[in-house]
Length: 198
Image 1 (cartoon, rainbow, N blue to C red):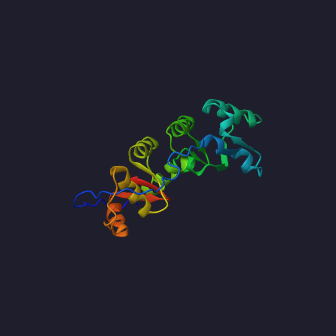
Image 2: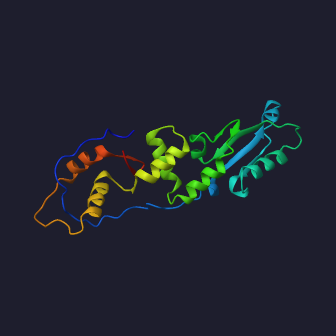
């Protein structure tokens, strides 16, 4: 959960450091790894787990996926699909998939993620911190408040100041970075190494 927003008093401190931002925009196509195991309730109730793993990337949109599911279970006149397993937990966390439902918006949402410039794990980290929310709110939050991936609060805060101060600190100035990071983090939160503004 994000920490409460605090108010910092005082002027900006001038310094520059050589810390590296880690994979801020490492891209991952969610469709490349997303798959579902599609069976039916009728088969399951008759003791059969017959179905098939369907890779979402093999279909261009929801309608193509739906057609493939009907073709797979063409032996039933009106199959009630059962999604017994899946790969890509984010899809379930967003409420796009459950045992008995797959959202018709799934391809649009995955396309938005892929075009956003942020890796899927950034969205997952934000969702883990903020809790359940609709995708559009999550998308806007990430795009407005994502700060990057860092190894620690200390690295994050030093990088944050480095971007604002072009000339660096004189060698005789000493900063308590741990105390500074503690204070700055009232206005930010972190999840799995990903930092967001509160």
